[in-house]
Each structure stands twice: as structure tokens, then as C-alpha cells.
Image (cartoon, rainbow, N blue to C red; front, side, top):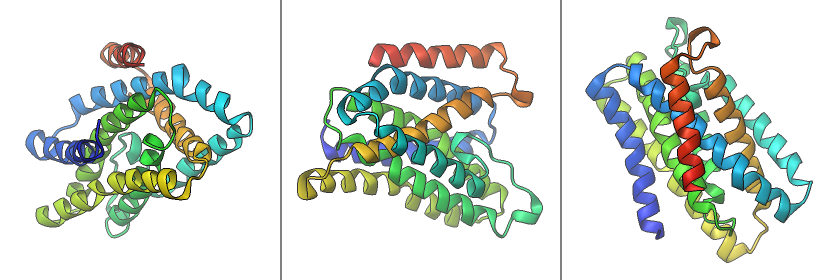
Length: 232
């Protein structure tokens, strides 16, 4: 897949998520999509990307995975878990929360896509499709919170548009690292993997109220596992 198409799909997936919020104005079915994406991400991490990263970079990559995990934990302090579909907005936070979530989601969106075209192995396609699937619920969460925070429609779509550019910027940064600086990108992939591990496991364990997974969400997670295995 060429770079232009990759960028177009990344931007398109964000706007698709935003449109779903404005069109349907409800989140019941979005949780199933979130559960599916969690299962898909976890599958491609454990079946291909994680083993191959350890094989190529050695045991030291574990430190970078831990850094990514802790970085995601820190970002969630500001985003309140929007990366995995939490969209709770309290009235006392209206003046702060949209800014915090936008900043933290943007950092996350930039970092997670940097290694897509940097780490030269046979499974970068799986990582890219995982990012694409993950962008839709991210955008749904962002647009839902912006709407709930009383942000005017035009301004909320401006934020969505700016957010949609974060992943392409990360993708282009990866290209720069590979072709210009000739840096070893394994540590970037490790950080991104740590973030993905945190998000995917949180999605699976918190995909239902009271941490209980109902039948439909279990099916969505298993379907994500199956698609991940087939694509990998």
C-alpha cells in the first residue's frame, strides 16, 4: 500500500468515527466495535509483532515496551480512558477535559503509527490495519466528549480535523527516521507496543459495565481474535 493511500485511510477513519457520532448519536453498537478492535489488536501483537520484535531487537526491547505501557497510563490520567472508549464527562470538568483529552489522544495517535512503515518486517500491514480499526473508536470517543462538553459543531469538527492529522504526521516521521536518519526503530515500535498492550487489554477487561462481558461483546472479542489470526 502506497503512502498516500495509507494517509488517506488514516484521515478517513477518524472522520468516519466522528460522523457515526453525529448520525446515530448513541454508543450501544460502538462498544461492540471497540471490543472487536481490542481483540484484533491483542491478536496481532501476540502472534506476530511482539515475538518478531524480541527476535530482532533482543531482550532490551522489554524496557521500551514498559515505557510505552507507562506512557499510556500517564496519558490516560488526562484523557480519562478515551483511547478505549470511555467518554464520561463531569460538569466540573467542562472547561478542562476536552483540552486534556485532545492533547493526550493526539500524542497517542502520533506515537502509535510511527513504526508502521519503519520496522521492516512482513507484518507491518497487520499493525497498520490495527491502527485503522483503533482510530474509529478513538474518533467516536473524541467527538462524543466534544459534543457533551458543549463545544460548537464547527469547532468540534475543527478539533476532529486536527486530530486526524496526528497519525499521518507520525507516519511521515517514521519515514524520515528510516530513510533519512537511518536510526534503529525498534525502540519506537517497543513504545507503541506497550501502548497497544495497555489499550487492548483494558478494552477487553472493561468492555462492559461492572467489568462483566456479555455474550455479544464476547462474540465481538472472539471475532476480533479470529480476524487478527486470519490477517496475520
